[in-house]
Amino acid sequence: MIIKEQLIADAVTKISVQSGPEVRVSGLRKTYERTTGREVVRTHALVDVHLTIEREEFVSVIGPSGCGKTTVLKVIAGLLEPTGGTVEVAGQAVKGPGTDRGVVFQQPSLMPWKSVRDNVLLALEFAKIPRAERSRRADKYLALVELKGFEGHFPGELSGGMQQRVGLARALALEPRVLLMDEPFGALDAITRQQMQIELIRIWNQEKKAVLFVTHSIEEALLMSDRIVVMANGGVAHVVEVPLSRPRTSEALLNDPVARQLRTHLESLL
Ligand SMILES: Nc1ncnc2c1ncn2[C@@H]1O[C@H](COP(=O)(O)OP(=O)(O)O)[C@@H](O)[C@H]1O
Ligand SMILES: [Mg+2]
Image (cartoon, rainbow, N blue to C red; front, side, top):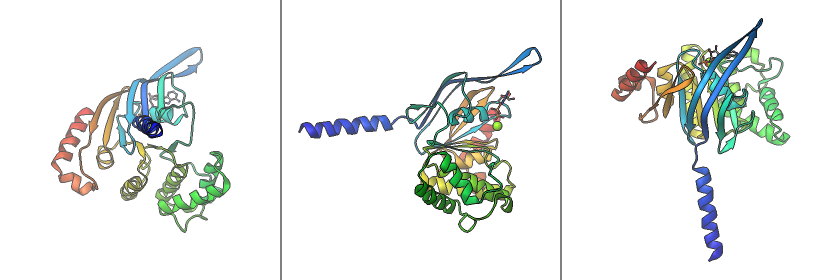
C-alpha cells in the first residue's frame, strides 16, 4: 500500500515537473554596447521580453527589422548572454549552448570541405555524442530531411534548399527539445521556400518538438504556427492564437475566413 502511494506520489511529481512550458523567457533584457572612439553607444535590443513555448507547440515570432527577434533567439540558444532576465528550458536555467536546443539560421554555415554526412557528424562530435550513435543519427536525420543519396556530396554541390536541409538535419540530430529557427527559409526562392515549409511541418508532425520560428512573413506564420508572437521595439507587443485546423495549405488559407481575419489583424499590428 505504501509502495503504491509512493508510486502515485512520484507519478504526480513527474507530471507536475513535465507540465511546465518547454521554454520560459522572463523579463529578458539585452543591451548591446559598442565603443566608437571615446563614446559608448548602447542599443537596448530587448527591453522586457516574456514568452513561453509549450511542449509540441509551434510558435512564430514576427516583427519589423531590428525589433529584437534574432537577439531573443540567440539568447535562448545560449549564444548571447542577456543583460537581465532568465531563460529556462524544461525548467532548467540556460547558461550557454546545449543539446536541448537545435538552432537553424538563414545561412546554414556548412563546412565546405566536408561532406554532407561529415557536416552532421561534426556537430554531433562537438556535442560529445558517442561515435556509433553519431553515425546512426546522421543517417536517420539525413533521411528525414530527404537527403538520402546525397550524404557524400559537398555543400557546394547542393542547391540552397538542400543546404538548408543539411542545416535542419544537423539541428535535429542533436535530438533537442526545442528547435530555434531564425528566418530559415528567408534566402530561398518562393517555390523552394514553400517546399521547405511543407517539409518542416511534416517533420514537426513526426518529431513533435517545441519550435520557435522567426519570420517576417505573416503568411508563413499563419501557415505554420499555433501562436504568433508580435514583437516591437524590443518587447512582445501581442500574442495571437492561430485556431486554424491542420493540415493547412497556402491556397486554403487564402479563402479561409478565419485566416483572412487573422491576416488583417496581424497586418494592423505590424
Ligand atoms: N552585435 C550587435 N551589436 C550592436 N547592436 C546590435 C547587435 N546585434 C543587433 N544589434 C541591434 O539590436 C537591435 C535588434 O537586432 P536584432 O535582434 O538583430 O533584430 P531583428 O532580428 O528583429 O531584425 C537592432 O537595433 C540592431 O541594430
Ligand atoms: Mg534577425
